[in-house]
Length: 308
Length: 313
Image 1 (spheres, helix red, strand yellow):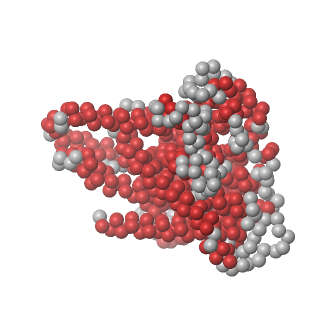
Image 2 (cartoon, one colour):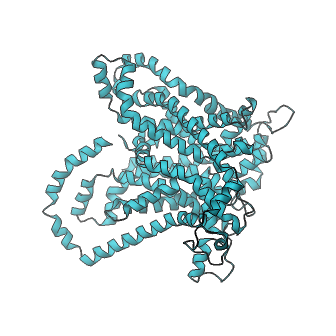
Image 3 (spheres, chains in turn red, brown):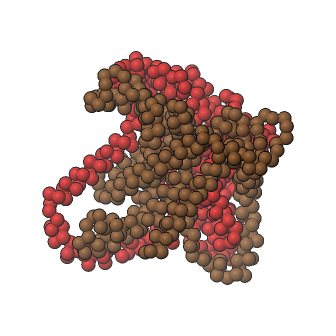
């Protein structure tokens, strides 16, 4: 991507110079009032988008800090009149949130780590060599996205049951590893492709062995991409619901999203507060990590689609 | 997305066949660690799952599972409940994917302009994307709540709704499906926007300036310069979104659990109940296969149209 940017800035000055003399005249030709109206329309549209994107989250925040009396009020307000942390205390009292968070953390961290260790070498091969295998692997990445999870989970459930890994953290981690491999491969292949092969060839010319080249030339350049992919795999597993719902039955082993659904069902108005508080807490790790890696994620996902 | 990468340039490794085979030996050792789990836990189960569709596999049964040929398929063909659910799934998938794309395109075009507050929109776009689907569902339940929800309160404030009892959006027979579709649009919009925005940033600026100099208006510039460059990304994004939406589960499970009266029972929820509430593994696998078949046909038509469009250019 950096390549296209540099070529863009390389061309831009000449293009600007050519257009410069005609530009002011063009601008002047468009009626000033119409341009202002266009801008105003654009800002109105942007504002509408901002409201649409933000208001559910703001409402969650507001609900999480409201005392029960305000939750039951006939006219709920945006800003809590008497903000309270009582809902958070209630949430912890009603459901085993710390244990659930620990389960989620374990499943997400271990599965992300394993997926990266397995996927990085393969992504390297997919990016560097054009073999029948790499074509098959790319095909599988796409096909695995198209299959409904139910067709995947039924056989997995039966297999894991045979191995006594249903209702087991190990079983869930196994499933998460396999589930995150396609997008880990996809992203990592994009990152590897962004590392110029010429650098590796230069190292080989200088007499560095293959392993040496990988470790001291490729790996450092790839590190940010690997971290971003690992964090993305972590977030996806942390957020995952369907597999955890099917595979984990004992309350002590369930992950955070599954435990959150225990708040649902028969909720009266007073229970909305703890529900919102718990949901908010469960989101914070994903939000924080995602904010860190957002730019890289979009880069990685698009690397395959935009390049060439 | 990979379809866009399919015509990849052949790298230096492909140029020299001898070097390629030599290096391929090493390549196998790099590939095996990921290949084994993929074969054992993804490709294998997928084939097993397809096989299950032709059996009477059930949970907790002592008798051996028997092959029943196409019995499940003929049962499914006459299962009006499933086809109702299938129809709802298609309404949901189209109802989410299409507006999502146009809203995301609008936002991406706005964010591509030099406007203030762009940073805020970009930051907000993270929220729905990073959130667990379960939390998205919970959050919108709070918004839609008949008494304590902000939606009904806002409608009351605007004088659009009666004094005390607002509609119960997620339990109303007529409102439930549109209500969950709005949530689906909200949840997937940021990802689509960011992808389209990245695509927009690859549209050559010089072309835009040249078109503007030739007197092309905004719409004409979009149609002749922006859209041709954006088209491959737009097609990949909509195809993927459609698949993901059709196969979606957690959002609607949390919002309505398929209710009221099955009005929002997406095929995935139907198959989940069949498999894990009633233990009909074989039949549920048949449902999964039917979903794959219909999706494949739709995608094939869509992508065939896309390739044809490419030839026209």
